Amino acid sequence: MTATPDIIDLLAGIEPGSPVDAIRHERPETRAQAQASFDALFTPAYPGTVSEQERYAVATFVSGLHADTVSRAFYEHGLRAVDGSTGVAAAVLTELDLGYAVGPFGHYPSPRLADENTDGPRYRVAGAHRDILGSRLAAALEHAHLLVFRPREASREALQTLLDAGWSTTDVVTLSQLVAFLSFQLRVVSGLRLLGVDLNAAVDKPTTASVDTTASVSTLRGL
Image (cartoon, rainbow, N blue to C red; front, side):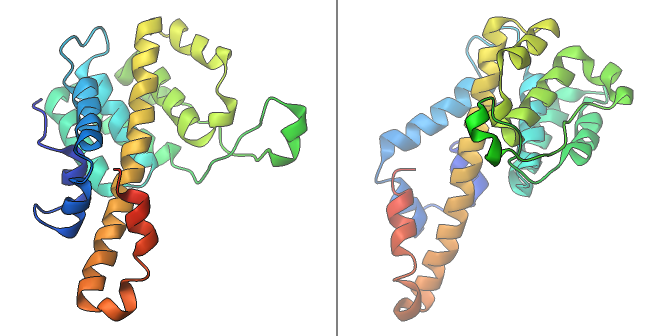
């Protein structure tokens, strides 16, 4: 897979020379760092033992859990490009439908926070798909679901489950970085899309929309 010119611009639909593009260019180092993170995770110089298929499978799953159809389509395209005829892409998409939920939820380990506990589904890969995905990827999807919907339940035991499924300590770090980056990226992309709509409205109706966009612009100038 080849690196995109700027993944956030692509997913947010930012056109060169647009108001949002100008705002992002005010912080070139931050913009470059975000792109460098994407490149390091999806086109690493030294990929180690986390395969390209695993990276794109997790990304497709996580972006789908966030209900971002554009980002999901991008990562699904990448997954299908490396999937061949293994059936992994189809299994991941089915698992996405099975695992979708509205969160966050879960239980805090501290009894002092018990009043904030909320119940929700404990996702597990369907038995029919475990042979297709393999133990590593099945465990990765379950862990990604936990981090997206039940981060308060992240624990040593959850990490041990990954190790038992064949993920090395280094692999687990890569997986955690991948899910964290995707969560960041998807939030930024969503915010920039909304900002673009606001700024376009401000151009059309400056007297009514310009005040509404002030807080959004201030929040997103560094992204």
